[in-house]
Each structure stands twice: as structure tokens, then as C-alpha cells.
Length: 146
Length: 319
Image (cartoon, rainbow over all chains, first blue to last red):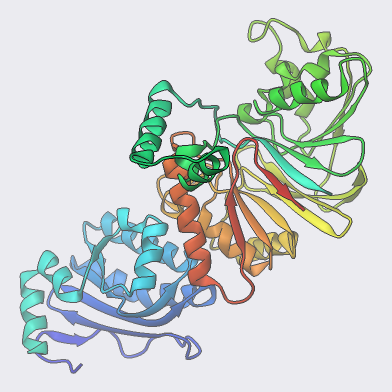
């Protein structure tokens, strides 16, 4: 997906995960849309934490929301879920919101088993998340994808 | 070791099945039986078995007490929660009050739910019985004496006529007790708790309750994995959901089913037994946690399957 309009890359370089997982991020007006991909197991959870850190800092500073597009995440362990919980705590302290979107069926089951569906906002897809979080970001997303 | 027998499986405080809880089970059973004819007891038994455990049974409400049947003449227990009362009654019924027995008791810690059954442990009041209480806490004896001191209990500890001895165990040291190799691990819990690894005859059992896991501490995780390594059964504190354990109930000293599965998979354990059930959970809630834990194990399985069960008062696991 190309970047245009209000969408721009969050940073030039992300930490190297050793090729196991990937992380992409862009800004849609007042929402950071982060897209991790791969298997977020114990070793990769730290990588996710490092990758998310500048996004969370920027969101907290700029009063922006964060949407995590999990459509390309195959699995997440307890360590990975902990990273998401810490992210939510950080943003809530800054009066900012974080949401998870587009969970794959197995990952959605893991969220439910861990009861993370009670502590994080979860949406069926990115568009639904943006519709709840920011009309300008949704407009930018629609403009980009249409 | 021959088998594990659970006398108390509940965490924090005992609970009881209420009249409305029984009524609910009866109604559900009758609904399921509607329109059916039963040809005999075997047919009836099969029908009851098909109702599911939350309807046809109950996880029970006694606090922590687990028996490890070694195959030898001496008894081995973990913790002295309220489940030790029915255990003691059964031992007396089996041997008679006049037949002295030896009881080895391994104490995870001395919080109320793990000691509150001892004043009701009848063998402690019978001369000739030997009771050896092992644990890592220096205040083990003081805690058991204190709970029987006035004004909290009418019978002072000094009235116990059995031969009672307290033995301090150290983490990292291997002991030979009651025909088993026993090792001890310090755990994360308010005031500390200790986990035990029991091994004999090629079988090994881990008793690890009231233990919180710091997910970010990889060295600590590795220590647990080493302690659990290749165990046949791990009896694991799965009191909370993962979300609870690391958010609103962080530092409350308990773990989750998710972490139990992950540690057991890393350690190539054969059987994870969920234990120290949340007292606010009814039978349906515990059964749901069990089903979800089995599903999580299935989703995350990379090698041989990990058997998962939820302990209930009266359950036995053959070793």
C-alpha cells in the first residue's frame, strides 16, 4: 500500500528482528497505523516492544491514537500480549487510545482466552477501528485505499 | 510414585456449592433427560457422564491439599488447606486411630488458605503419629502455632499429641524424603513461596502454587523451565486470566493458564494440571477455563501434545 495524502512513514528504520517478523507503520492524520507481521513469540516480543516504542512516544506527545493492524500476525505469546498491555497503559496515561484490528482467527482466540478482549479495544478491521477513533484518519485511509 | 490425589484445589479461601447451585444442576440434568427412557444403571451412568462435569460434578471448594501416593507406607502431602481434614478422616478410617502413621507435609508457604486445615487434621491429635512438616520458611512452625493460639482457636497447638517436627528446606538442595528425590524452588509471591519437584521410579511431579511469573524476566523463565523439565505432571497455579495476572492483579502472586501452557511446552512436560482455582469461579467458569486452556495448547503445540486437566477435590492422576 502506497503512502499519500496525510499518510507518511513513522520513521526511516526499525530494529532488526532477524527476519522473523516485520513491522510497518504510517501516520493517518492523528492516528498511527502500525502493522506487525509474523509470529510474536517470546523472542520477538522484545522486538515488537522496541519497534512500538517510538510510535507510542510520538502518539503520546502528539495526542494521537494507535491502531495495530494484526491481519498479518500469525501468533502472539504471553510476552507479546504483555507488550500490548504496556502500550495501552502508556497511551492511557497520555489520554490517548490504542486499538487492535483485523485479528486472524487463531490470534483472536488467543486474545479471548487471555481475556485481552476485556482490556483492549478490538475491531474486526482497520476501517472499523478508524471509524471509532478519528474521522479525519478514516477519510485519509479511504482516500488512500480507494 | 503411583498417583496424585487432590483433597483441596481452591485458592485463597474455601467455597461451598450452594442450594441454588445444586438446583441449577438438577434442572439442567432433567432438561437433558427430557423424553428419554433409561434401560438400566449402565444407561443412566452413561447419560450422567455425558452431561459434562459442571452439571454432573463439581470442582469442590476445599483449599490446597494434595496427596502424592508414593507406593510406600508413609503419606506425602502438599499443603495443609482445608482439604487435609477429609484426608485425615480417610487415613483414620483406613488404618484405625490406634495404628500410628507417618505423614510428610511439604508447605508451599504459610498463608491462611494453605495452613487453615491443620487444626482439623485429626491425626495430629493422636499420640504415636509422626508428622514431618517441610518448608522453606523460617516462620513455618510459628505460623502453625499462631493460628491455634487464643483467641483464634479453642485448642492450642501444644494440645497436639502427635510427634510433630518442622524441617527447613533450602532451594537448590536435593533431599531424599519418603523414598523420593525432592528439590525446592523459591517462587515469586508475597512473603515468598516454594515449589517442589518430587521424583521417584522414573516419574516426576511438580507442585508449584502461589507463584507469579515475571514475563519480562527471561532468566527467571529459564529457571522455571529447568525446574519443570520433562516432568510427568505439573500442578500449576492458574488462578487468573493472563490479562488479570499482568494488569489489575499484578503482584498478587498468582499466574494464569496461558503461562502454564507456555512454561510446560518449553519444558516438555507431559501433563499440566490447573490448580488453585479462583474462589469466585463456579463450576461452569472453571470448565470454560479448562476448555480454553486445552484449545490454547492445541493452537500453540509444536511437538508432542501437552495433556491439560483442571484439578477437582477427589480427582486422581495415575503416574
